[in-house]
Length: 208
Image (cartoon, rainbow, N blue to C red; front, side, top):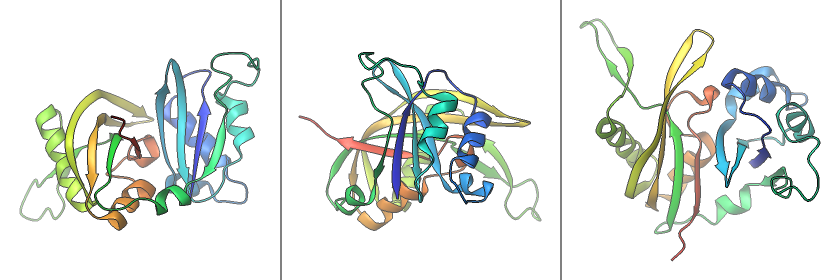
C-alpha cells in the first residue's frame, strides 16, 4: 500500500480527480481508480490531495494536471513536497490500545425499505449531526476502534454527473480495539462514495 500527497494549485471537481486517478496508474484498467481512496484536505493554508492506493501512481501526471508545476523553491507552499510513501511500515505499527487523532470524509446513509418485497431499500443521506455521528459509531464497531470524541467539521453535497452524494467530514480522537479490522479501514475505507472522494480515514499521533 502507498500514500500519496499532492499540493493543489486549484480545487478540482470530483470527476476531474476521478479521471486523473484513472490514468495515473500505468498498465492498470481505468476501474483501478475505484480501488483507490482519496480526499482533498488542508495542509495549513494549502489544499492537498491525499491518495491511498495498492500501486504507486504516476505522480508527475497528477502534479502536471492539478499540482503546482511552476512553483518556486522558496515558495511557502512549494516547500511542501509532493510525494508517494510506502504505507506498509506505518500500518504494521498499528496496535490495540493506541490513541490517534483522525479525520474521515464519508457518505453517511441509511436504507429504507419501500415495501415488504424490497430487500435492500432506498438509500437516503443522513442529514442531522446526531444521525451522522451515530452512523460513524456503528462503523467504528465494524472497523476496530472506539471514538473518544468526534465532531462534524464539514457537510456538503458533491455533484458527480447526475449523481449527488452528501459528504460529511468527521474529526476527533479514537482508540484502536482491533488492529486488523482497523488496518482494513485505513486501506479499504469506510462507507460508500469512494470514487467521489469519500471513505478515506487518516490518522495522526495525539500530542500532549
